Image 1: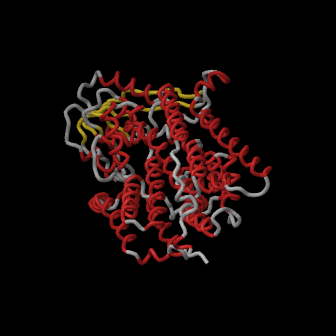
Image 2: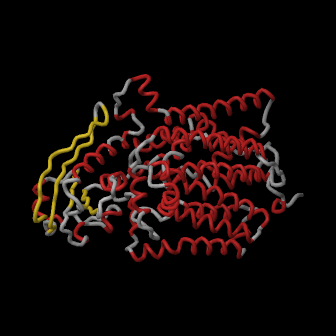
Image 3: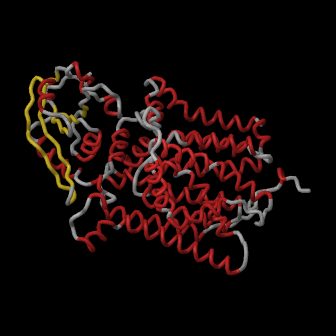
Amino acid sequence: MVDERHTPWVGKNEAVFPLGLILFLAAITLYRAIALYAANLPLFLDEAYYFDWSRTLAFGYYSKPPLIAWTIAATTSLCGENEFCVRTPALLVHPFTAFALFLVGRHLYGAQTGQRAAILYATLPMVFASSWIMSTDALLLLFWSYGLWFLVRALEDDRLFDWLGLGVCIGLGSLAKYTMLVFLLSLLVYLAFSPIHRHYLRRPKLYTALIVAIVTLLPNMVWNTLHDLVSVRHTASNAALDHPLFHPAKLFEFLVGQALVCGPLLLGVLPMAMRRQSGTNGGGRSNEVRRLLLTMSVPLFVAMLAEALAVRANANWAAPSYLGFTLLIAAWFTQPQGTTVHTLWRSRLLVMAVLLNGVIGGVGYHYDALSRAFVGTERVRHLDPYARLRGWRELAAIVQNRLVAYPEAGLLGDDRAVLAELGFYLRPRPPSIAVWNPTGVISDQYRLNADIHLQPPTASGYLFVARGTDFDAVSAAFAKAEDLGRIRIPTHRDSALEFRLYWVQGFVGYNTHNR
C-alpha cells in the first residue's frame, strides 16, 4: 500500500514552459491598458482616497493597512500623478496572479489544468473590473495566490525556503488587506483535519513561517497600537453586529453579485467541480488536493454569506475564494470523466464560459462607447457602472476657478469624497486640506488627522465645499464666512452632484452641543 505522505502531488513533476499562456496574458494586459487609457475615466472615490494616503507614507491608515499607499506612491513617482499611473499596479499584478495559479495548478494537477486555471482567472469578470481599479483586492489576490504556491511546495518537500516564502506572502498580503489573515486560519484548519499533512502542526518550519508573517506585519501592528487600534476597530465595525441581524434581501444581492464576480456559467459549474472526484487521476491524492483547495476557499466564502445575511457584504469581499474555486473548476474541465461526448461537451462549455466572461468584461470596458451608440449621450444613473465617477473633474474645474479669488486658501470639506477627489484633481494642490467634523466622530483618514480644529491658524482661510452643512453652522464657527452660492453638476438624466460653496476665515471652534 502506498504511503500517501510520500506520494507527490499529481502534476508535481510535469515541467512545461507555458509560452502560449504568457503570450495570452501579455495580450490581454495590453488590451486592458489600451482600453483603460482610451476610456480616460476619473478616479473612483477610494482610488483618490488611497492616492491621498500615498502623499504621506505611514505604516497604517484609518481603514486599511499601508501597502496600497506604498504601491501608488511607487508608481506615481515613476510615471506621474495621473489616473493611469494610479491604476497601473492593478493592471500589472493580475497577470502575475494568473501565472501563480498556473504554477499551483501545474503542481497539483498538471500543466493543462494550470493553464486553464490561469486563463479562467484572467477572464473572470471580477478581474476585468479589478484590472481597472486600484484597490486592495488586486494586491490581496496576488499574495494569496503565491501563498498557495509556496504552501503546496512546502507541504510536498518541507523546504525552509518555501515555508519562508509562505510567511512573507501572508505578511505582505495582510499589509494589503486584513482578509489575508483568513488564509492563515484556513491553513491551520486544513492541517488540523488533513490525515496526510497534520504532522506539520508539530514541525518548527510552520511556526517559522508564522513568525515571518508576524514580523512582516509588525510595523502596522505597532502603528495601530499607537493610534488606538483604529484600523482594527474599523474592520470590526464592518460586521455591524449592533444592528438587526437578518437581511435575506442582502444575501440574495450578494449571491447575484457572485455571477458578476465569477461569471454565470462558471458559477453554475462550481458545485460540480467541488464534489468528490473519486475516479480521477491520482486517486486519494486528488481528493487531498480537493480538501486543500476547498479549505483555503470555503471558510471565507461562508463567512461572507453569513455577513451578507446578517448585515451586508460586498460581492468582492469573497474574491480570494475564487482562486481555489478557479483551480477546482479548471480541474473539472480537464480531468477525463465519462464518455468522449462528455469530454467534448466540457471543452465547448469551457470555451463558452471564457467567451461569455470576455463579453461581460468587454461591455464594461466599452460602456461609454456602447451607450452612445445605442441610447445616445444621456445616461441613466442606475444603468451606469461608472455613475460614481461622473462630475468630479467638472467640480474641480469650478473650484479651481473660484480659488483664483482666494490665493493661498486651503480646501475644507464635510465629505471624504469631496476632499479625496478635489485633492487629486485640483492643480496646484491647495496648501492645506481640512475636514469639517463637528460631531468629533472618527470615520475616515481625514477625520483622524485633518480635522480643522487640529490645523494651525491660517490667515488665508479656506474654500469650503460642503455637501450637507448649512451656512448658519458655518458662520457660527468662523470669524468670517461668506456664502458663495450653490454648485450643481448634472451627471445623468436623472441625477446631479450638488454642493454649497463658502469662504471662511478664522476658525473659532465648533458649537459645543455638536461635539
